[in-house]
Image (cartoon, helix red, strand yellow):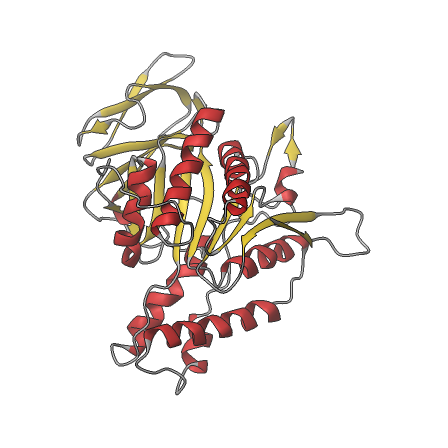
Length: 371
């Protein structure tokens, strides 16, 4: 195992911010990049990353890391230091208000110009050519703040990886995945091994989150250049939501880590023998088919359905009770699907998203993710 320290803060600042990554195996073969808690206080992700690190040390000693694996167990040291009224606040950069998982570079426009005349009929060679350019582009990125320096450090480790797993967690939820539509078949073994409750796919969610910045450029380029110059979806980038914020246990983290390791074996990055994923636990659904149930007014939130349950269109998933009058507003879903996330707060204000249902029929467009 190689430990790398990445200095994030500039030398004349009042704070010292450092990022740590662990590297297993050696460059030259297939590469996996795994980071945890880009939104900082996502404890299930960080605990799973620790289980991964320990197991990868064992596997490396046994000669079973046949490719290269990079693990970043705490991907957001800036966010981990942000606390408001004794509560961690790691989703947004307090200096700018920007989500730490938004605004990564999308190099499609630059690449389609640079690649003119440089591609051929060999898909593997096209991948090598594109990755070489991507490494150059990320190296040229000039950060203007500690947050952009952090983004560059993370992005530079991931941009040429075959597999990128971005580990997060929800407020409350079942384990679920987000991935690009062209990656559905490649992601299915991971979903099966992790026994996901939902898999949400889309060609573009909007906002340039980390996983899409690594993967979307591949199918954008393929669509632009066409069949004459084959370009496969060479980066399997997935956002993995490891249940809810308080779903923290050694048992769950160990189980999730083992599932991820088995998936890396499916991708020929680890040698764990033949891996047979279990039967699928859910069917993938379009992210455009996800319904957001929002609070129409302030009130006490009383759920009537649990995460992971299947609900019908028109079904009441929660009651919203006025704390003074006692008047109750039933919150209904308009789609059939799986209730895969909900809010842990039990008092909400108008407009807050209190639940999400993974439906099978696409009906939304535009920006598909929460802020």
